[in-house]
Length: 73
View 1 (cartoon, rainbow, N blue to C red):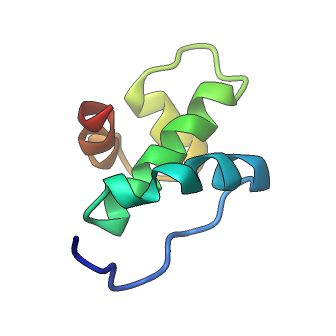
View 2: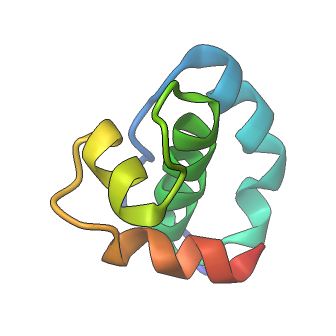
């Protein structure tokens, strides 16, 4: 396993706690962050749960970074 170069960005506490169990599955911390952002998006109150809409909700410029995490699941 590759050690991450930096710590993952914190999101909502209960999502961070839940996702921490899956941390070892990700080689890259960016994919782990995207995994957490997907969970934030799925639990948010947005109307359409698409990757571009989730990206806007969590403050990303587009949904491209979420695609890697979505394909890992």
